[in-house]
Structure formats: C-alpha cells, structure tokens
Image (cartoon, rainbow, N blue to C red):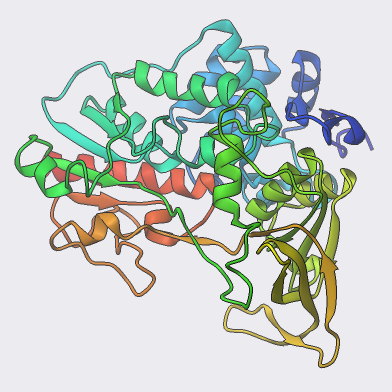
Length: 461
C-alpha cells in the first residue's frame, strides 16, 4: 500500500495544546516533505490546479520539492500566490486542490497544503523573497483593506509594475488573518507579518489607521489623490445575531469581538492591556470555522465549551480537520440543537441558555435539509458566556459614502466575478465585501481576478 497513504504530519498533543496558544500543527521537515512529494503522479492534466482558486502550478512546485529545490518551488508558488505560508495552514484543501487529486481516488490525496506550508516556511528561514516587477508603470492604484483579497491584489499589481498603496482601517495590517484566525492556527509574528513584509518588498506602500469613508472617501482618492483605480477588499466584519430574548445580556459576544480581543489585541496574554472574559462554561452558537476558532479559544482561556449547532455533524460547515481538533481538545458538540432564549442573573449577566432539539426535514433551496423544531424538547444549559458565530456581512460605510457604487440587498458590493469591476468606473471589488463571509483562498482568488481586471482597464484607459 506504499504510496496510497500520505506522510503523517506532526501535531502538539491534544491535552497539552488545549492549555496554550502555540501552533497545533508542526508541519513537515525536509525528509517528510520530500517523501510526501514522491507520491505526486505529476499528471499531464492536473485536476489539482483546476481546484485551486489562484491556479498554482502544483505539480511543478511539488516536483521541485522532490528534487530539494525549495527556492525554485517558492518562486513557482509565488507567481500565483502572495500568501503561501497562510494558505498552507488555513485553506480548505480537502475540498479544493486535494479534493481533485487523482491519488485520492484509491487512497490519500497528496498533502498539497502541508507541502506548500513547508516550502513557504523553509523559504522564509532561508531569506528567499518573491521576485518583483522588472519595469515600473507610472500609474497609482489604491487597495482598501489589507486582508487576503487586498494583499493578493496589491502583490499582483506590484509585480505588474503599478504604484500600489494599501489603506487599512486598523492599526495593524492583515485583516481577518490577524483579527479573526487564532494564533494556534496561524501565528501572527512568525507567519502573517512576514508574508505582509514580502508584499511590501514588492514595492507596495501600506497606510494603517485610515478608515475609508471617514478619513477619506473613494471619490477623494480618485479625484484629489491621483489614484486611477481602486480595489475594495474591505471584508465582512459586521456580525449577525439571532434576535432571541436575552441576547442583550452581559456575557453575550459576537465571535468577531471575542476573537479580535484575543487575536489582534493579545488579550489571552496576562500582560495585555485589553480585557477579555475568561468564562467557566461557554456556549458557542454556530458550526463554521469561526465557531471552531471561538470555541477553541474559549477552551484555552479555561472554559468548558459547548458548540450548539442546529444541523447534524455531516452538515457542519467547518473543516473536518478543525472539528476533529476541537473534539480531541475536549469541546462538547450539541448538534441538532438551536437556542431559543438566554437567561440573565440578578446582575444582568448570562446564567443559562434554553435550547430546543431539531430534526432535519426537507432540503432547502441550496439542497441542505432544513432543520425543524421538535415540539416539547426544550432543555437548558447553564453557562456564563454565549458567543454568537452566525456569519458576518460587509460594513455599509464604504458603499454609503461612494457615489454610484451598487450594492445588493445583503449590502454586498455588486462586482463582476471575472474582473471585479463594479458599477463605478475605475472601482473594483472582491472577497467578502462582494460575496459575504467566505474563505481566505476564495478572497485571494477574487483579488487575483481583480488585479488582472485593473491591469486591463488601465492598459486600455
């Protein structure tokens, strides 16, 4: 069966990692990576590339890993991806590149994500950086937001020779990579900051603490600051709630706030000046990757954690790897369960949450079976904190301050999928600002498409 089973990746022991914020997955070493690379069949019609939203030449870089040419593998990946060390850690490879791998038909798919991570981490240790533009163009492009779509668009445009400036609302660059994804999945100093530095080395300028729509508008950037094109990659940071009784109690948080305090402001560190609640018993409502991140963060802060989700395990939208890690660490899953009311104590703090059992009925418009309440099945979970992880939508600040920018009923910017062009001439958009909350790699794919669209627009202008 040699060749049918992937080389296992080393991880922190579950009992140990549940008490710290160090990275869970330890990645491949040189020998492990080269052994795994030999499993790639180097297909003539590589379906893995078709499954990659940024179209990395996967067989080529894996062949270079096999030959021990890490520098070459890194440059191959960098032609398509600005954030390989990030993607190697947080991409849902199982449903994208690895999901298309021919090896996966009769065994394990090649561990493409772990190989990408190995290349990026090793290249960083060797001081290798992506190759920049050979010729400069005298045209300015503004990028709004320094998350995955903004960084990707900025990197691609800089490689084409454009004069690129990123405007970031927060005091630190990285968007969801720094405020949303925990340290134990994506280290900030060792990985995210280094990836951003590589983008800056391409010539990209970065301005933080600039809130577009308040500090300056898109119209002012184009009319007064001389930017000939603008890309909006501002993400979707506006959290949703259930609007159930008791939701205004103290101790009810959005996953966004809870994770931002911990990830961006380092509130988990006792030396941090940012306060964070350390619950004794916490209920996390939702079943996506953000819910897993919030649950695993609360666990590391000392809580017994229950994940409440209204569908079954097969319907959990989170990556199987994240669900598996959460279970190994001791998180309790209350599936086919939905909250109906939050109860307060005499001081206005959460004391319990009432839930009702669900069963799956007929499929909805997307093909997912709709959950239906089971009458008389209510029960109560005692807790001192509830974290709502029900998805997010774009903040309407940019769209409401930009003349002629069309949005849909969900307040998402309307943009062409292939080029990122919006209803306003010279303004492009992509990522969560257009689609609503989605994955890092899909946002990167949108940033890549928009960079190409902007290049075509400015070349023809």
